[in-house]
Image (tube, rainbow, N blue to C red; front, side, top):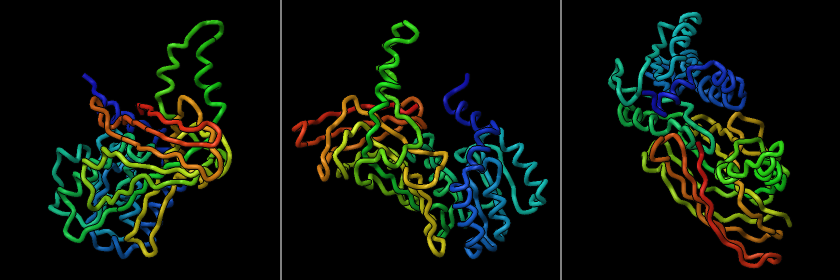
Amino acid sequence: EATAKDYYFDSYAHFGIHEEMIKDSVRTNAYRDSILKNKHLFEGKIVLDVGCGTGILSMFAAQAGAKHVYGIDCSGIIHSAKQIVIDNKLDDKVTLIHGKVEELDLPVDKVDVIISEWMGYALFYESMLDTVLVARDKWLAKGGIIMPDKACLWMAGATDPSFKTDKIDFWGDVYGFDMSCIKKVARVEPVVESLRPDLICTKPFVLKNVDIMTCTKSDLSFEAPYRLQATRNDYLTSFVLYFDVGFTHCEPSIWMTTGPRAQYTHWRQTVFHMLDELVVSAKEVVSGRVACRPNQNNHRDLDFTISFSHKGKVNGQRSGSHDFKMR
């Protein structure tokens, strides 16, 4: 019987998703530069690539002078990746292993460097971070490094007045049929999209910092306060999450951002649309808390609760809380 985990791994067996990730130049260049421009971190070292996919990061590490690279992936793409390694004459330096980090043993006791592209939408959706942490605790040598080693989850407020008309009210009359029962489901689903920078109407706020060298699996469930200051008079209809990751062992440090004002990435931004808009004036503050936790039935899915409170010149005191399900 297929499980959600089986579906997750099978989805990464398809070439299209790897094409999208590799063509994401912000993503791929960040990893390439952190490896090839910092060869001193890799020369003569044993490297582990967690979730190696096509093997591109493993091959970068081999080019950087790694003594040997082990790549692990649980999806069917690993079979193509093995041929890619052979075709590029790196099979004496790169060994790819099909299986789950949690269940297998490496041919070596310890590794010096762990590399992984583990991030998902809103940083944690379908994230492999828990698997990276297992690999860290099983194999990372004392004094070893992880790349990237830092992550930062950001929050902002946005105005998107057309969303309710285009995505919610639409279901009330679909070619003459009443499909309004879908409205309730549509409302609780965050939307992954490239948000125009001019739609952001607050200053950004750091919701959570993650140190991959020291964090634990329990950090994947969190509740954090936020404080968003409006930058202009506007209708705040939505909350936005995006993230940065840092390769701070590099000289100088390399940071990759997925924010709306930066170059496009395949992660885009994750937008949470509220039931009702808030009328905000410049410098007014919307505050509250964000709770994020893996879904009980599938830990790669996320459940969010976002509370808010705002005292404004126009609407007076407003507060509430919305639940969202990221599937």
